[in-house]
Length: 145
Image (cartoon, rainbow, N blue to C red; front, side, top):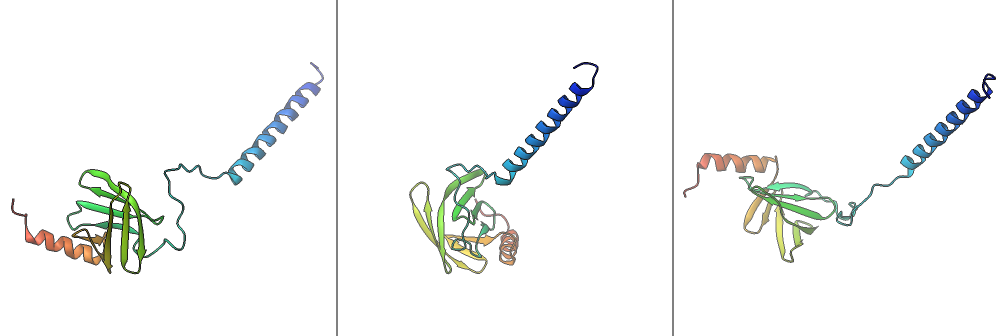
């Protein structure tokens, strides 16, 4: 209704109403939204899988880097190859058992911040044991060819 101002008021009221409704929907969606999980993601950690050994374990030369994830999975990088080995693991006391996605199994033993696994010594990254191992490696000089 031109000239009365009433049409403008109705349009403004409708726009305001629509804005409020959309805002309410947006709040509703974000408050109940759950993250989308792919089937490749592991379940969130439980108190049964969380242990003090979660984190990054590395060889003194950093060539092998094995991350023990809190969800019971591990991801091992070797040199420039990320995710060279992946799979699941379980820790019982100071023992660790691995089930690699490719089918092999392995085990290891923790001794404080040192992990004995597969003939290698791994160190909790940044720990005093890791720093000592790196210093010893550096002071020994280059390895013979």
